[in-house]
Image (tube, rainbow, N blue to C red; front, top):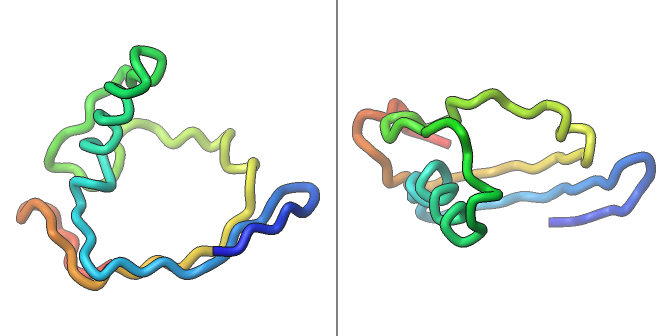
Length: 89
């Protein structure tokens, strides 16, 4: 990963590759762990269904102007709930 502190926004670029991607580490389970660690201030008002891979709450697009990024992600092997229709990432 490369970080450039340029104006008007910083820029992040790079390639990320995971040999084994465990979906439970990257979605609601991870968010719940953070909420427990950070206390009530981080608590979300909506609950993430366990059978959903992507967040069900609305994207907060006002945060998208904080940084520009060009990041390629590759997940070689995916461990997930069999009901999620993800086969390659």
